[in-house]
Length: 323
Image (cartoon, rainbow, N blue to C red; front, side, top):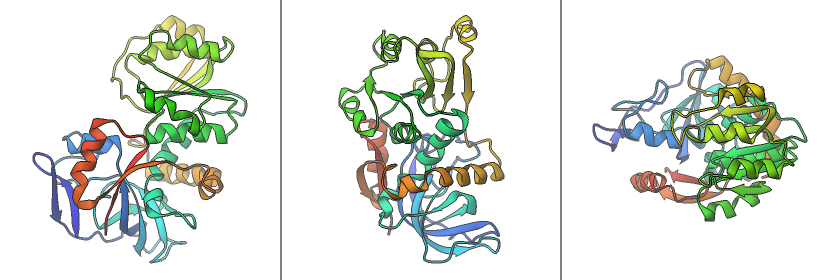
């Protein structure tokens, strides 16, 4: 089968063996794949958890049809329309653990479905599980114009957040955040941004911060947070290190929580996926929790899709069709 790999110096296409299912696996015929920031890192030669290195089949989330299932898999049959997350997606066929595969709701196309699994899993875990959002609380999403950021705002609003604030340093993308649940859009490159957050919450600060930036914005997050606020560290787009005021952290009794799927067991991921789908399936099916697809590329233009993502000018998800 045709697949896109990380070669010695970048992207290459090659013929590789079609995956076969283990007892708990699903093999799917891939129809569409969505790009993620982690794909850029793997393409550049960096590891993403245990994934990476020369010869790695790229891609993390996909949509397609079940081609084969393992002996322990129930509830799925060849021909079923499914979406999933995991490595090796940029190929004609991919293999995933049964816990990482979800049914595509009726009426939803492959391109839209491919854009959802990573965002749904990441942000349900951040907002609902680790962030413990309660109805009536306020939420700040740092880096809100990415696909996962937009989903964070939509999930927060769906779960009853009283006020949702999103950030972007790009004015055009800031203007688009209101359509995804933001009551206020702010620019974290402006020195006074934490005070704008506090003003918008009557001086209290936000109860929950979903942080995709980290780096130098962490100090501002402590200022923007309410007493006993929670900061969930999802991404580090602004940098891996930053200075914080430990006294302010202690005075506000802030919880700073780091999350990733890279160090979770198979059973943990299965349970998180089960819980997410139980909570969000109706809102996914009726389109409440959808994401915009910024641009669609054919498989042979995957390099252009990566270049578009690296340029960081898109709003929403980039999707590549296969077959």
